[in-house]
Length: 365
Ligand SMILES: Cc1ncc(COP(=O)(O)O)c(C=O)c1O
Image (cartoon, rainbow, N blue to C red; front, side, top):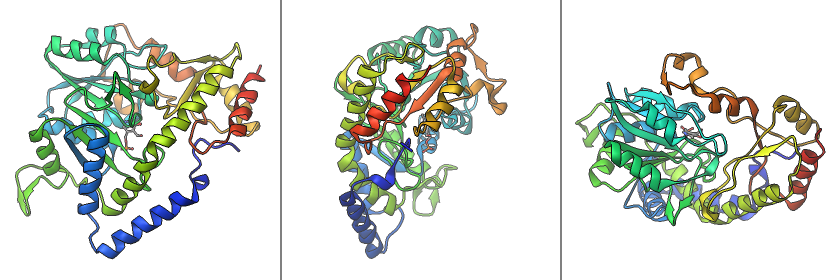
């Protein structure tokens, strides 16, 4: 089976480097928020060309902590997309704020600015973009839209490590960027991990306080914070895996390019190609098919694993049915959820694997 992710096939040299990083932490005798975390934070900030990175427990907490650090909470509306991991919207709710859902552009599955404009109210405090599947686009327009309305621009970068728009990295356009390092992400730990990147020292400090029970100085609490600390073993592993990230990202792009050039089945539609070479890091390669279930089963029967990201848009999830949405509805998100299928696109795929996936898809009728 060609898997969606194949960690067991990773290079032996990477396995050994990770073992040695774990050994270093064990020998240090310090396991939570120590030098490995500090060094990883500095390295990740540098990769994102940002002054501050704050390691936290996971990507969802990064969003919640970012919102709380900005003072966005009770009574405040945050406009975001229904076509995302549930964690995006759950984080807004956990910060005490009110998510409002705008529709997507059907060609990219990214938020549609016209729909976002229709959702803006007197209570709107922010737009939370999700760089879905690894795509970043049109950031000047988003910056301008948020400036015009006097609201914050926030970025959920959980799927977009190192994605760049006009040479600027995801997470650097607005008030904060929230990253997940869940194992399957382009940069993944071997457990849960996340980080917030930002330009503002006060927000960085506040995030550092919130992640650790709201403690400003040991045992002195200025906030009711979370326990969302990054541990030393995960930070040490992330440092090793970060070295591989550019090479792994390049391989994802090669696979995607082969798919774009060679998938030619008329029953299958691909999402829009990226506008810039570095503006897509292919966390996922997603196609659309009106007979999605039949295609999914056919591919599995032919040795190609596949998933759906995401089968249920957020406004159809039980706890979110009452959320305010675009007054014109969310038809593009609903269509996408019913038709999208993610096929394998990970750095351990061989050329033969890529050819097998393409041949299987082209033979589907
Ligand atoms: C777009 C998006 N946002 C947020 C998250 C949440 O990250 P985590 O699982 O690390 O909490 C994820 C991960 O699934 C995601 O894909």
